[in-house]
Image 1 (tube, rainbow, N blue to C red):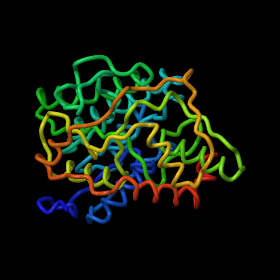
Image 2: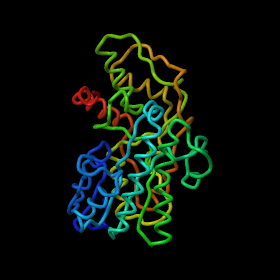
Image 3: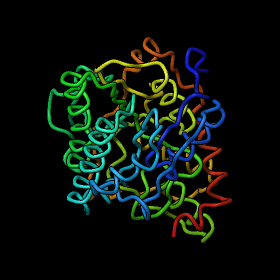
Image 4: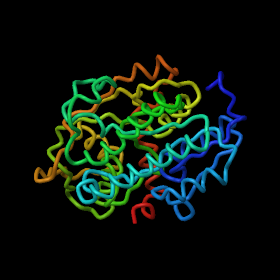
Amino acid sequence: MTEQFNWANQRVIVTGGSGFLGSHLVAHLRELGAGQIIVPRRAQYDLREPEAVERLYREYPQTTMVIHLAATVGGIGANREHPGSFFYDSLMMGTLTLEYARRAGIPKYVGIGTICSYPKYTPIPFREEDLWNGYPEETNAPYGLAKKMLLVQSQAYRAEYGYHAIHLLPVNLYGPGDSFDPKKAHVIPDMIRKMSEAQAAGADAVTLFGDGTPTREFLYVQDAAAGIARAAALYDKPEPVNIGSSFEISIRELATIIAEETGFQGEIRWDTSKPNGQPRRKLDVSKAEQEFGFRATTDFRAGLRHTVAWYREHGTTNAK
């Protein structure tokens, strides 16, 4: 995979490493032969507190890289309910982990941003150069802007201190291990849970947010992990880079496919009193391929089948 980079020599801190994306990234780094992987847990290190971040780096003094995944995240409902905490938590964790990594002399910092940082109305496909051409979609703007500040900080630190920080912009993720909690779930796990529960209960309908017209691009979580690892190893420039699949689908079509995969045969109803979110999302992923050779490989429908199968085995406990 990353032939030009010796993972065996790396001591990597992965914040958020026990989460959805983090657990897959940690597994992938182990496959690549990373020398040591440190996953700080919130009970020991509250990354919103300077003392905790400073102590983390002090306790692992030979760290060579930080991959910062930790964030407070959720779907449209969670973003609307907790805009303040989403903003504060994401901003503080990003600011502090980067600042103290610089102070500790850790050679590289990999910041993970979000597709939510793009303007609400961005030409399709989203190009990295369009990131500053407008305000994000309102329901997730606080989270998107907080994450965007990590990009500003990384570029400022590179300019002033010559610090090797990069910033990646992954699109919406899905796959085994995602959160199916109704208060936190994004659109794919939320639909899988609702339709699976409706099927099991013999219900004749499910109700989904919005009107189904928005489009989204989805990236299988294991592909995302591979892309982040390649960038961590091979990319070292100030410009942000999209990480995606370049596959766009409407929410209405997505619902139809998930109904087929879960076996739900009832009616799909749309609650138009609920927000649609951003009208369209589709990334230009050419820079990732040009700069560090990343291209997503998982077929979308195959990825959905894996996700549904995981939910049937684990999701009932994950959703509580």
